[in-house]
Length: 160
Image (cartoon, rainbow, N blue to C red; front, side, top):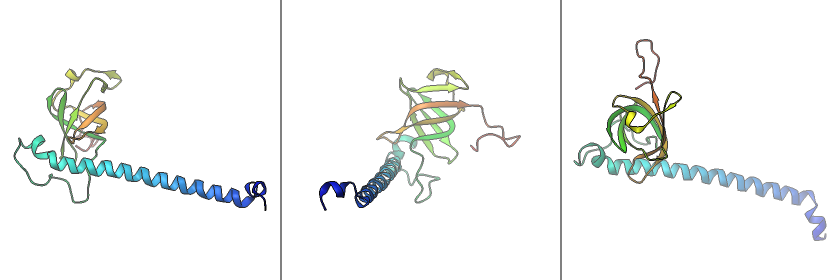
């Protein structure tokens, strides 16, 4: 059989489809490994940096509220602002973990439809933060959304 006939055969087409599927499966697997590695690295650095960030430099024990095998959210968080020290603030999430959020010039801060300035944030504001982790276990914020405080009387709101 000559090369031209083989390239036009169904067997060659099947081989190409098989290779395409194999490449797609490998790409999806590699993307999962990349995301898992980033999340595990954030969790690891959170434990290393906890004593500097939250207990005044005293070496503490394990991160409270974090069960073995459970990773904190690295790319975002929701919770109540505890302390503001521009360009950062500390927030406590529903998992009782405190996270440091870093704001920069590219950070968009919204209250409802209005864009607000970082100076408009107040302690006890409820926020949702979306961003990316940095090497110091902080969240570099891309978007901060200020929410109304949860209304526990009617059972509505976020579970903070």
